[in-house]
Image (cartoon, rainbow, N blue to C red):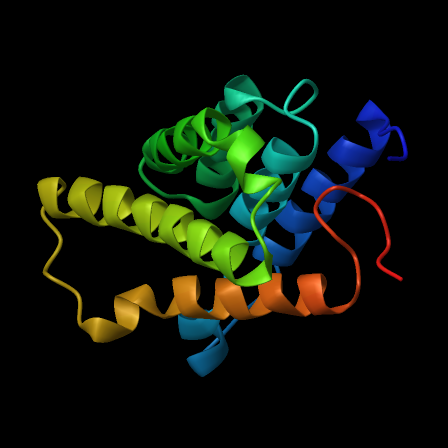
Length: 158
């Protein structure tokens, strides 16, 4: 397994934040996956000694600042998802592609549901079924990364 540098992790997190901040509109905005959370989950599974719950909290605060959302809601959602990811990190590296996809999909749903609860407490109306579309598009993006022959362990498949 190739060693990972901290600069590589933070550059990819910055790239995820940049993709999050692109001017999405219409159906693209409704389908936009949470790029920052996907990158966080990748590094939480691949290198938990460099990317941890504190990194998830910091990135959540940056997403809240950049997106103009209620301060701390993404931070809480990312921390809850990161906590679950770190608990099962050793098992997740042993999962096959489909098990890992299901695991990441559940983590994306957990973050979405935490955000939904916080928004409902904030006085928002109950969203429709399309609220969970970013989790579905996020898992499709995850599968694209997995099927591009890059494992989460960092090794290329033969």
